[in-house]
Image: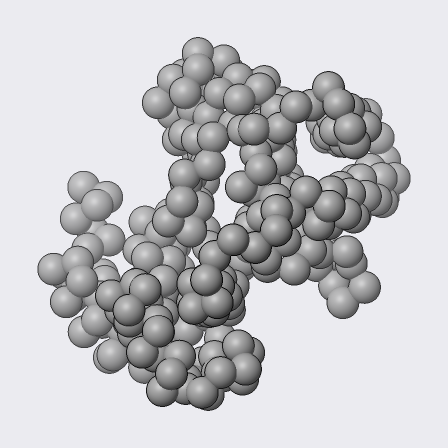
Length: 270
């Protein structure tokens, strides 16, 4: 595991304040006090008092403060092959639990204590040798991911959706987790183990879009966040979001947002 960035905030911004963006790393985002909404992958998740979210790489996100005071910490990291990063389905299931957890029962008091310990460690960074701090924080992150995996798996409800709904949801989550990578229809079909034409038909019935229409939407949403919140060039944004051609990216972006990428960025920064 490699640590990319970390920090904490307290009473940040006041009600209505926003923090977030998009980056090519996983992230643990922990709210310890206050109320906030997490906007991530087209869904809004509520945090009331305590919540721990797992964010996937290259997925735009924003934490919107809903109370006068808010205390939270975050850690962005690259997970290695041996790290206990939960699967995509587990991550979505876990994030969906936030806002409705009773942190006084079951496994949650122990998890809450681990969250507070990580918060105290991040706040004490300046008083510790860097190597000791880094090793301790990475150990805490791995422990939290391991606990999330086990708790989310145990809390997952029995499937209630039809097989077609489950298939499309599986395809959606797959695209959301790998959209910066080169993807073909066969890639999605191989992942879901369904015939490509059948998959496209079901996907359109459930979402009103084709798989590649949804994929393009994901890429353009991520591109707009990169353009707004980073100093990456248009070429770099195009590549980071999975577009194979900057010309196709520019045409698609203008069709969606009404301006070419560079012009759109300048208009937002006036």
